[in-house]
Image 1 (tube, one colour):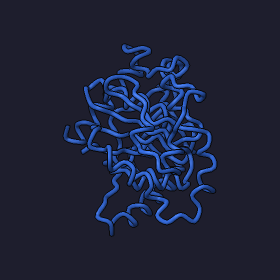
Image 2 (cartoon, rainbow, N blue to C red):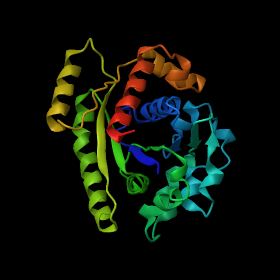
Image 3 (spheres, rainbow, N blue to C red):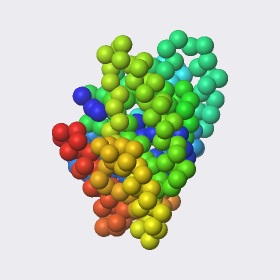
Image 4 (cartoon, rainbow, N blue to C red):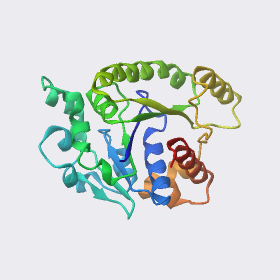
Length: 257
């Protein structure tokens, strides 16, 4: 059975999509079947893997709002990596689902038919606390929270934790768990002393949940999406590629793979 992980933080610009693309690519290179589900209306994970919005016929929006089979929304990127692309129509998801019973469990139900086909399913979440996030967290086994080495990103952590706790309380009666896989520190500038202070503050808040791997600021990581590639495919020997490969191995150790 595949492990479903939401990459979530309601603050934008902390590296959620970057982490989703590059962690998925690193897991695929470990010969693990990996599926990305792009749940962000900006479709950055979709574009970042070389799929233009104009070529997306069906998307995660259709998955959540119609009877379409999940198998009909999946696009193959390479032998071990697939994606369900996103659409700007996700901006209207709240209005579309309003009044619907169990609207928070739509994705969970759709994933039941395919989750055994994948080792990992990564959900790229929007920077919000909307019904899309609720769907992602209900469907997930755990959450990776990317946190930029910045005070405002640190401050937003508490809201994300509250949302995770809320969903966990709702999942408990259903016999389902939602855990924090780990807090991932991103965009670290080793020339900036303040960044190290933020690392220590996050470690104080989550002493047992911080990934040892820290993702540095990297021109290769920034540039790779322009070419529709992960940083591993764009610059395999770069620092950014190495860090995401280390993150994948750390995740596998935690998962007992």
